[in-house]
Image (tube, rainbow, N blue to C red):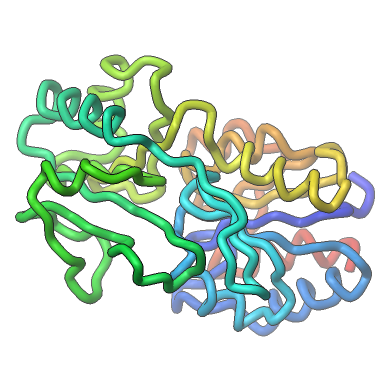
Length: 270
């Protein structure tokens, strides 16, 4: 394609290297793209509170699409611009479906306020015995009834004894088109969003803000939650470490995330 007018990138397994940082080479070419008038947008399954450490390494990010498209976050102003949430009644139905086809699976929810670190309500909450997929501080705990009582931008379903692909095969037929289900972690973790919400719809919102058509967007990703975005963008690039299903639908496959795969493509133009 010709030089893009907007660049979108997933974060983990795509933009970040094995050390969970942005390489000097990648940061430099992203900086050159933005200096040339081409916005760089983070599009991730991460919640807004996990965005500032990444954006700070680049210093040029204005918008981030978070929670797999459910949240649009203004990084510069630290402001949630919009959110698509699952209401309590939908969360209750999802809980019942999980109990039927994934007995023993534990649930967690992501909520948002008005900013990344808004503490008016606890943002990430899990039920007792939930096994966190990423290392770090244990999240707050609530019983399932309280967990499902407030709107959430994402429901997390955790079954560490299964792979995420196995969980999806069991749960997706039970849910049909009622919600969007995907995963960004292979080890027994599904991420559920309102129907019609994906990284593609979130990126489309940002593209509209900038007035850039999809044909002039290049997007990078590696996991099933990136598939809709790579299909939607004018040029979808999968990393060499991408899930095979994602690699199969990409327009191009670049080097691994820990081999400056994003930079390798962007350096053609910037």
